[in-house]
Image (tube, rainbow, N blue to C red; front, top):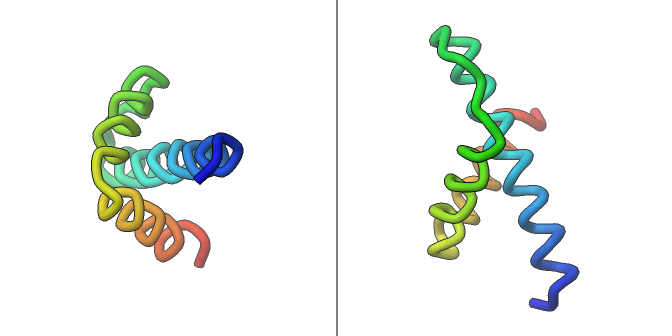
Length: 65
């Protein structure tokens, strides 16, 4: 993966993390996530390829459909 592809994937992951959190926050009544927390979650998700794939799959299933 080159730098451009990683940057695009990181942006997709940020959007997915934020949207999934916003859905849960609205449903459960929690406050929305801050940008710093998105970055921390992104680092944790990127530790494994499974984490990346699982996050994008959940995003696609719940947000895009």
